[in-house]
Amino acid sequence: MALSEQKSRYLVLVLFIIIIIIIAAIWAGRAGQKDEPEALVTFNASTGITFNCEVADTDLERAAGLMYRESLDNGSGMLFVFETPHLLSFWMKNTLIPLDIIFIDENGNVINVEEANPEPGVADNDLTRYKSLEPAKWVLEINQGLSELNHIVPGTDVIIIFNT
Image (cartoon, rainbow, N blue to C red; front, side, top):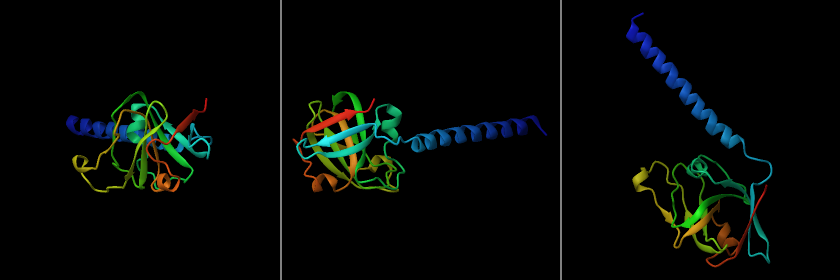
């Protein structure tokens, strides 16, 4: 076997192993969902509309979000946490389920709610951007339509309790 052919096979093997490691890491992240929610998000404290949420508080977790999920329980969601409030923009890249994207300010009030639809096969540059109208510290994604059903609108008060 020629030396260049050996190098090519070695490179292919290394790339294959790297791809397997990446896929395993993504799978572990998805499979590693906890039995208990990482946070409870309650709207309208008097009525107690609560969502059990996974928390995305690192760049990697926020980038992955709810990508590739085929469903989301109606009482569940994903809470995106940011260190400081700022104007935020979300998209639906590789997201398979329609969502409500709820932007929340640092005082625990809903800023705005956006209904976001999957956009399969759309190039990144052409994906719809869903933006906070004011600086947001948290963003909650839940099944589309639940905000309207539960009267979650701008100004709605929010209580977030993180499990420790």
